[in-house]
Length: 545
Image (cartoon, one colour):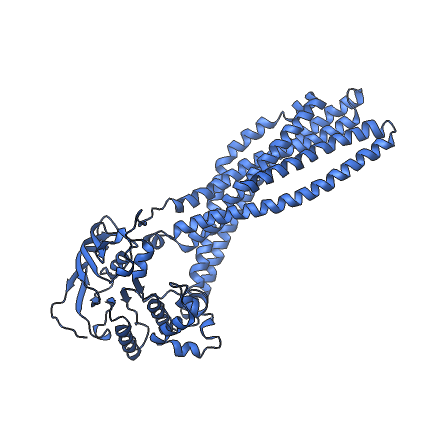
């Protein structure tokens, strides 16, 4: 707030200097040049130069302050929207294109920020310049002032007529920009598939079509924007011409001095400038409202799960005791996708296997256990505490998930292993990697644990990615470990080694293994089958592969 007030104060000071210069010019001409008083000419010319230098310095300081303020507002707004995105459920991301989200997070947020900050500064500067200029113009000649602003009502009426057209064109262009962003994200992340299917030409054609469509709408918006801004400017030019005609008549008739006309024309330029700025802000406001609506569409998305107001802390009491009591959850009202009436108790340290066909509800169960969603009916209890009563951070530290679709970030191997435990030492990281059977591979790399693995781990094989993910889970030391086809990208022998390692390192940890291959998971305490969202236990009994 202090920075904003200082920016406004400096802006007011610069405007005051700008308003003084034309009047000094009038005195210089009428009382100096026309009367032959060179001392006044030199004095006021010096004052004009001094004010110009001071205004230049103040302008530089103000610009530096303003850019910093504007940047902080942009970053805070973007961080706020990003923070909201981080709380949304996987269902949101299943329905929204990544490119569309990025377009709103980048372009639309920036557009709202530019209007919010630029408009405030423009309004303050413009209001001061307009009020000051108008007062001096009325003092110099009220008749010329009336002529200068006679066509202003027509400008306002025209802009109101153009508003819906500009808004519609801006919205269409924003959507086309999102289409292009989505295309790049989707195609660049699928280059290998495109190449293997010889689809380069097809994708080039898609890009050309998107570019042509975007260019057509961009040109339409340019025409609309040109007309919207040009017609008021043309009306202002017409009014200015009338001022010079009438003012010239006054000067030739002796009713006004040449200095007065020159000063009046300068003040008129300073007054019409803010008027044009205000009219332009009206146009910019329409564009900003389009972006604001797009940003609000994200902000209005309902957060599926929230932290409890007063969470129950499990802390050192965590043992990994899991109980599901009549849990049901569906993604749609038709209840075609989800899980139904799941009841299950897994004591601490027990290892269970859940198998079933694709679409049976296994991934939904994982999402419920990790609390990306809350059940519509029933409850999930961890160590006797209802999951909604546990802070999300603690819950997701107690329960770790190793997914078959391993997510890695652009960074070093160490960065990725320590993602869940940022304070881990290199010794701890090495121990986790050694247990996950990937330390030997890492030690052979030139930069070892400081090796950058590329976007989504592009420099690693599928098996290496999965083993990094397992090392990350090992480092977290969870009490309940969920392995969703965690060894699907490695050969059977390596998979058996990893399972033996997990049995050794997580002997006291509750383990839920989701796999289509029963023989690959080793000995288990219980076996369940999931089908059509229901869970049934295999009652053949025994610890067996």
